[in-house]
Length: 85
Image (cartoon, rainbow, N blue to C red; front, side, top):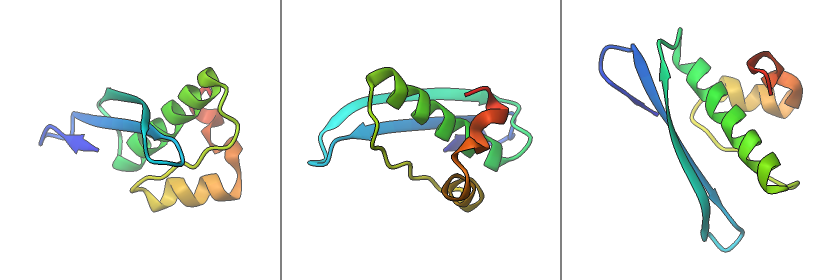
């Protein structure tokens, strides 16, 4: 994630790789006015799940810097429901 210094926008970046490490897809998105960094991490996880679903990928690994988001996903993948996924 990257911020613009004023915390009014956060950039999220996604990179999808296969088991050999080859890049299959990537995406960048700006989240305007996030209430906190963990929200941006949740949006990144949501975007990753949307990308995986659109490509028909069933076995995926989501990595990120937000321990809260990652541990929540490990406990219950429905955690992204509040974001509309």
